[in-house]
Image 1: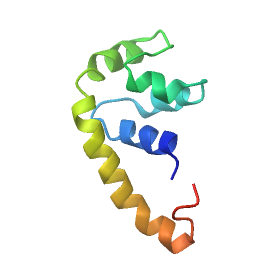
Image 2 (image 1 turned 90 degrees about the vertical axis):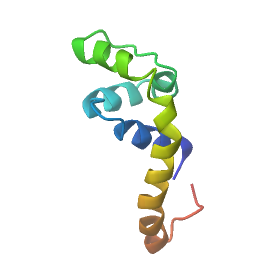
Image 3 (image 1 turned 45 degrees about the horizontal axis):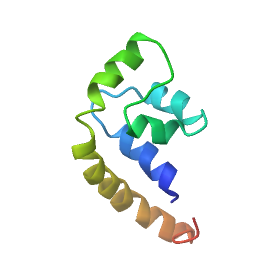
Image 4 (image 1 turned 30 degrees about the horizontal axis):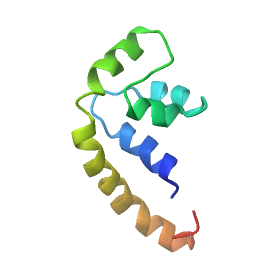
Length: 85
């Protein structure tokens, strides 16, 4: 699993962070990296709410990455994709 995918999935585990916003931002160049820094290109109520959530999220992101790895590794192993990305 690539680092950008891992980070996007870790963001999806942040409580109350809108998944649709994450997807829209992830489709933009460097969107996931910018979200991790609390920067969101979109101007909307959902984006404003996310901007409030993201400063507190970094404390959870490492744990979320670990959770995503723990959930994803067995699936990737079964598919023979572990370590290929």
